[in-house]
Image (cartoon, rainbow, N blue to C red; front, side, top):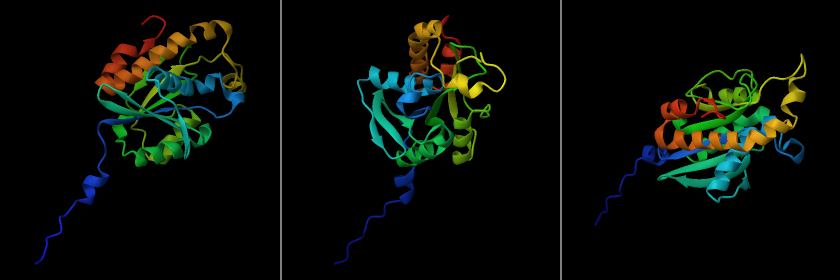
Length: 209
């Protein structure tokens, strides 16, 4: 007797998981970078993990945590490739977890926004940010969502690197937890309601929202 072998399409095996999200916080690893402006992306995903009582595990190309929110799964990623090579980690975990491009959110600092301002966009240029630039190169597209966290631009000519790698000023440090919380809410909103809702509810001065 011959038995028919069931056919399983390889396409289904590789199709994206529409209920899974990848939320990436950009920053640099190492204690010398902790608490600096350039690492605020790390701070936001740390807040997301803390809210869900989840912890990070050091894996290939980054620290990863898994959380659930309103029936959906989010993988929180802090690349350990350093800022200028962030795209390698994003591409790897996007492929590993079968995350569709529209379910990726990158959280990053932005010198073009005043401190406390948040701006979520569906797509866009790298704006001169080396982390975003590498992600664009590695994914071969600019069509991924990003949540920009304003850090201001209080630096003189040629002093940008020093500025972004410095700790927050006292007044900024006092307001920082509130702004980080608003950014975390924007990320949850992106997952639950989509990019238009996140833009409508959280774009602007977080201290006034």
